[in-house]
Image 1: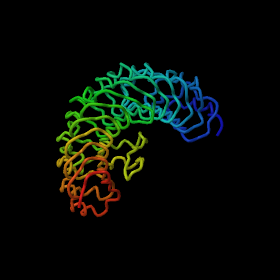
Image 2: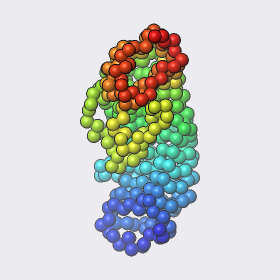
Image 3: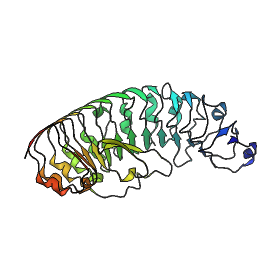
Image 4: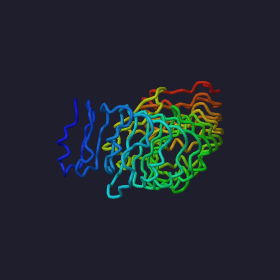
Length: 357
């Protein structure tokens, strides 16, 4: 509690400074050694964005999350690219920034992690999105963004985490327009509760290590691509070290399992889920999906699926622990006895179908 001592400015070799989870007042020094990491998460920095932050030198790793910062985000610290730092990040989640995503971020071609979760940002994606070729994580959930997704996002070869989910966002258009072959490193893909249309593109299957696929609550039409049954990351136990970024990225993953929204933080690397519910998918449940033995959650509810429930569904061992949702479809025939093999399944919803037996 209290002001930051001016004597910190004499630490000329200082590279890392964390003042998170404190009650700070006053200002921080304009010059603080050779600083490359600054964490001010959950302090009492308040509105508007302090002028001393705007005067800071180039800092490639900066966290301003969980404060009461508001107004325009154009007053952020220096935005010059800093290519000598391994993983440049900018975390602004759970603040109150408004207006659009600032154009000044266009200069951050060095960024690997960009988290703008839970602000009040409006408008569309900036056209400069194509500059973020190093981007690995992009989280824009819980804002007020809208419009179509630029096709340039499909050119990000390193993107592993893409989250555009609901709570204010209203993106639209066909996902086939921006899911391209070069976008093949995704492990988490969440576009839940927007206004996307069209079919599920086969190119999405190029992301063989996909662990979370959540396109629920859109207007996706057509059939489920058979190639989804070949997603290696959902069918096999694999090394998830490439996804484990908890040492610098503390945002959780919210998934609707067991009928409620649950947030997974430190365990997000182990969550394997497919959510296709509340769309307009047709025809039968793909037998190929039953080969995804590592899935802990499969939600196909509220579509127009017809035919029988595949008997092979009883071999999906990981479903023993969590969720299987097939409600509000047009499924018919007998309920397969193989479901009894899922002895620890905690949430099974087959309601509002035409099942018998």
